[in-house]
Image (tube, rainbow, N blue to C red; front, side):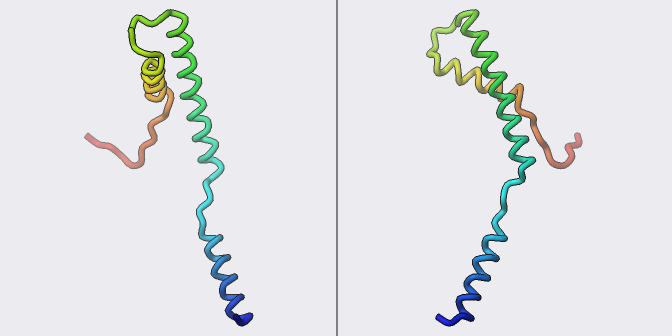
Length: 86
C-alpha cells in the first residue's frame, strides 16, 4: 500500500471520527436532573406507602411499579416542539 493510499485512509478515518455526534453536555445534565427528580419523588412515595402500610394485597414489586409510574407522571417534564392549537 502506498503512502498516498495510507494518507487517504487516515483522512477517511478522521472524517468518520469528526462526523460522530457526541451528546451535548447540557442535554446530559438536564436528563440527569430529570431522572433525579423522578427518583426523589419515587422514594417519597415508597417511604409514605411503607409508613402508612398497604391496603392492597399486591406484591411489593407491583406496588413499586405503580409508585414509579406515578412519580414519572408527576416529576418528569413534558417537552413539546411546536404549537398546539384547538
